[in-house]
Length: 291
Image 1 (cartoon, rainbow, N blue to C red):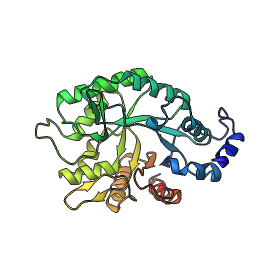
Image 2 (cartoon, one colour; image 1 turned 30 degrees about the vertical axis):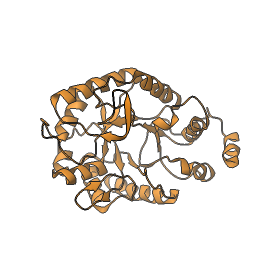
Image 3 (tube, rainbow, N blue to C red; image 1 turned 60 degrees about the vertical axis):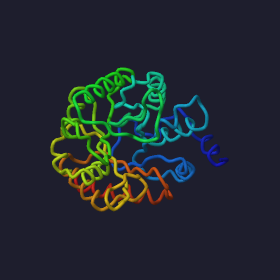
């Protein structure tokens, strides 16, 4: 802890000399609390970091100080799980106001959340839950995204889900559902290639056909992560290195859409920083080949 504060003494929280404010490029990393000190002490060569917005929405304290220190060194994005865009509940405007305050303070390149729901009747779960692909559900999430964008004053990125089942009463495919949401809200897509692979395997659809149906100019960011093979299904744990089939699908994605900024996610059993950095460098090799 002492080393962290020594580091802070040398950098003004408003000094942007070390950051690239204009945007993100290349293969970045999800910022995890166990890696703060390593980053501050070594200033690793990482093009950008993604911060989990829900971890920094309190009133002051060490988390936001650390976030600002990272922002002074690197471009950042904000990625959240609390909008509950697919819920039948009304959009939580208190949550959105705090998120807007955070975004205004940190000036991220993108703010993103998920095509999923995490709350009902004001009660929150710890999981990103699926929704049926119906016109009613689509209109609900379109209305929520439109309202969220109005509050934030910026275009939102939404992430495709990982799923383990399909609803019998869905009226369209996932890619049709997502495409309609993008078209009618003007929002952008955060394409999680691991999620796509997991969902395609679990629900027996073609990931390649899914990709081909997406609007090519709306994908602004890619996520990569590791899944766990449970035998009769794949479990999206984000707790392993990126699996070979996901790397192959990632290469196909880049060949189709170009060198889109890519993030390595690792949410459970987080390893040493150098393990994540190795995954980032591997993703960068794919990006360099396409570029």
